[in-house]
Length: 393
Image (cartoon, rainbow, N blue to C red):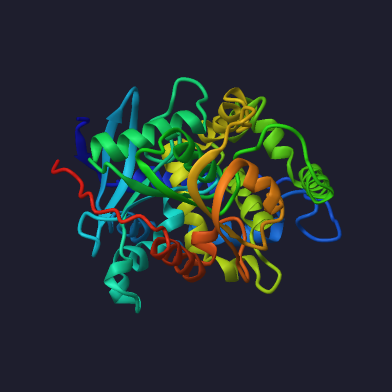
């Protein structure tokens, strides 16, 4: 059984001050005028606002306390040190739920939903709705170790299944994810059906064999390609030559922040709210700090090349994820719009499909109440009673 060790996040004042000095001395380049500040990339006004808060308002010590508020650990699996948060709440060892984040998010994406999911009676829910939560950092992200070369989501699924079954002793568990976490979760459902009772996604990751079958599917692919032409340059770079981006970003916290901030702007539901209304500046900066302070901006970008090298999530003819699958469709998902149900049904055993009223790509962080509500409803209707308690460690 892999050895699990306690872990705490620790940033020294000297380390943080070096970063803040780089932010203060950043040589701002010219930015072109356009129809809006985001037309050519990250908006200068928004970025300057966030950088000013980083140096003058952000309380990094409070952020440390926040990141250390829940039990977290490290475990060696294969050749990787995997960092994870483990919250055994009112479920008391039952109903384990693995939550997997994506890029450019982090395990911190789930901070606002930990309490309601683990301790529902404190938030107006029922004890029967409680989950054990396991929230890892992806390989090459945050506090997990960096691989020697890009690895993808299928191998990550193998690592995470070992985390759940071997390190933590959960013989059966549930899994949820969006962005890369959605593809990791999908591979878990496909490759480990004896352990994964059901999965919940807020982004469809697997692609069925063959091309589109209907006019609706053809139209969806067309919309997706148009969106990728407008907002997908980052993807092509990171899936082909991610190290070129790494050379540019190293030692440049403002550049890293701009690259990450642009995704939060482009992928969030901003139809009725501004970016700093959907997320607080502190939330955005804590997520950015996890990248900057761990030096994981480069290795996280490799993850796209890992996706490509693993085959891009395309299923073989006749292959399908037969694990019962729930999908929450958040309407503000612009670049990665949900496929038609017919497309999803060819790749997954879809047993629940919820069209959410609002929200975008970073669902747990952006719309925590709606996210929790759908997770609870999914958990109540899985039809599988997870009575197997975890083994003592």
